[in-house]
Length: 527
Image (tube, rainbow, N blue to C red):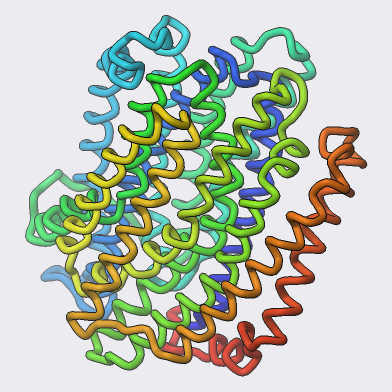
């Protein structure tokens, strides 16, 4: 597997999705703002997506990929059919009824679900509109979970592009509805806009599922709905999924906790976190998620072949590539938070005060950005060994840290305190994962990599100093017209990037020889 190429495909498609996502959120900020209907929409959109990332993209993928790779080794079942085909059909036949029943239960219980996340009904967010919006969007969970099954199959055979493009379809559907609403109502009908958005989300789930089903069939896989049975393979997957729900999903579990605490804060808090997280998710999605998806199949193959050196090399290459891009991204977002948020979101119903609060949340969120990326890279080392239990223990401890820090920091700092608590908890989880891998002899940081990380940090801090120095010069333009905003932010970010890359090359943080090593094929692809 070509790690750099695979990460580039996933990251490139994710970048396209994130660009569309920015357009989407710019329109949402303009039409809904940090208002009551804005909060209601964000809650309705967050709920199925948190469940999706927790159960489907996190736990299911982590457990399914190693088992599916094992079935791909030329095995056949007793009827002479490829074992991978039979396995995927068995999982689909069990997976689909569970998704339908779970979705139906949550939709029926939606008033009580929202009550829980609304400070036990004291936050004023449980009403007919918020309940209806959440019910309309929730079928997206079942549809996107099916998409995840097809994506896991494609990723297992190193066909990443189709799955990585699927989120773009969601954003296209939502942007189309937002543009229609802007043309139809202008900024005068936020409730109608929110309803149209909710329907667009569920429709997008259907489009995404159909898209990946088509590409899975093109890859040679056929699916048959069987009588749901707890076969040996299904039971094995279930045993792996249960702890993986917690181990792979610490970030999403933290988001559930965030929803609970956000319900205790002022109107607009859900919007502040959502808009800040949009900027935070850009490097996390492009780098962290892409690397995590790309290395799991490779690690599974190396470990299955008892090739410890290959597994070590893949892990180190992923860490170096991830930190090379993530550390400067975190530093840049920290120092440039206010001009970036102002330039992107300040318009229509999204006020200057809203932009200032969102920037404060973003500055705290990105403190944990490198840790989230490292977690995405380190966790597959456990899953590839079919060890989904150890990440449960590390996640449990960091989750306790998160809750305790929320209780302490939210009364002092509000939404930024919540973001800071999550960042500290992420670093706690990251440290525990690495320590356990090191003690078990599965992975260790080489001195060469450690020195390179130090150089990356020094280069990134210099970039941060440059951005801080330049900030006042563009102060009058960050909230101006579209040209003034674009030019001022591009100069600010571009100048910081020039400083970082110049120092990174000068200090050896970026080593061309090492980058060339990243392009070596660690294992043959199955394309």
